[in-house]
Length: 384
Image: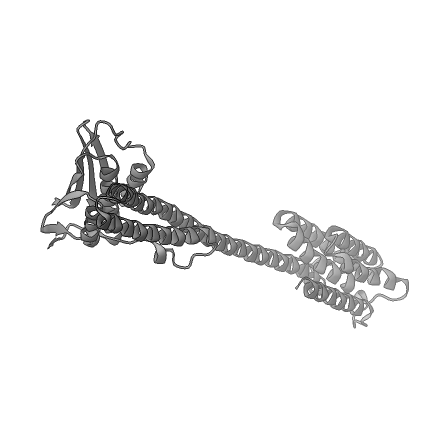
């Protein structure tokens, strides 16, 4: 493209050069417009000036006007010099801007007007001579139009490029946000499965000699949990490492409250006694809020399993006005440090709940740990 533009510019310059030369040697009927003898020299010099009009428009315009004035003192109106001045006016406004260009064009028009009057014996308003003055003004207007159009195209191109860049940045930002959410979910998946493995390892160790069948069941559960957590970690990590994610939701765990039964069964299999109190009359929720509600219960059960006492926990799910209230409460073992509200699990849970405009409250009385979460709903109640 740059080479093609250069060839086109050179071709235009050759055509303009030829036009100026033709106007210099053309035998006009009126002697006032015909340069002969030595006057052909100042009549042909503007042809050379137009070749440098794009690089030094002021020089090209000045040289053309000087030739026009010289010929005017000889009593000749030079069409070639004034035509070259018009081409130079176009380049001047196009390249140097509107303010500088307008000043240059007006000065050139005044010089051409006075020099033509001098050549015409004092007739400043000869119609033939005034045509060349008007051609200078028209050339300046066309140059300004070309400059304005070029600037408009440049602005629109820049806006389009910025818009494209903004779309790319937004897409990358969304992918990064999604990967952060995936990393948070990774904590929940690993914490739950490791808790299962830890508890069953203890059961297998204590029952290895006295109850081999019980130990075998525990080892089977450990094997299953290990495979599950390895598969989850592998899938999530491969997604986090990916440079291009077409659909990041494909590998994300997207459980909801409908999966609470399976979640409770998994924790009960490792010895946790769960009292699930779920009202029949609940409210409908968005998929995002439904997934967050599931993660709240999973985080609460994981903390109860790791830090709780007596192996029991109470989970309450109920509708309160236009919100869903989730409560996970479990006794605390005084010898075990209770979960900190600033820990990674609860901190990540707070961020997820905040993302769906919910609220989290953590209360530890020394004897009981209570995790309470309120999630917004669409307000429409359905029978569970």
